[in-house]
Picture 1 (cartoon, rainbow, N blue to C red):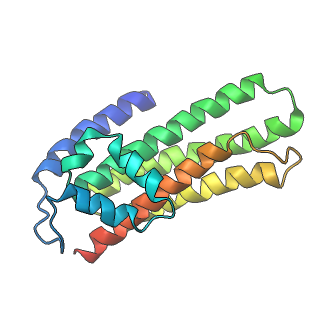
Picture 2: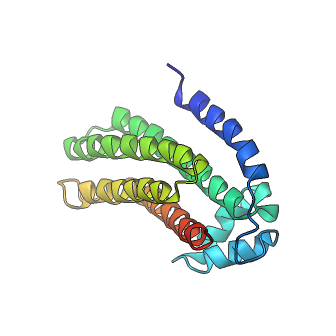
Length: 186
């Protein structure tokens, strides 16, 4: 069985031709004006600064069309979820407090679900099944919220994952905004 990193590399390279040759001429905005697209997307988020810095972290975003921006944010979201999953495993190995361990075990399940959902979203994206991408990003969103609530409502009461959970929540918000734009353009 291939490791998650090898699977991700395969997914990334298998989608590159799709992104470059997919026609965006039906879009109601100039797909070549990447800064305008990023502004349109980020202007709809709760945290414009986070959104812009996320896109600015990828040099391709400066010249990307809407499809490529969607792929970029899916890739960033997947990387975020897999990083969080590894971080939770590290915390779990070091945790001494029983309540913290319980919360981390709960979050392990949440992030496994998020990683799987976001990986599957690449296939939906490749097939232009945007509602599927939206559904998978909602799973990642809900799992991040659920992980956070496992600590707040549990005996630990303080989550060591708050900033990481919030980041994935914000990334899924960006995915949803792009998907809504793609669906309107059809």
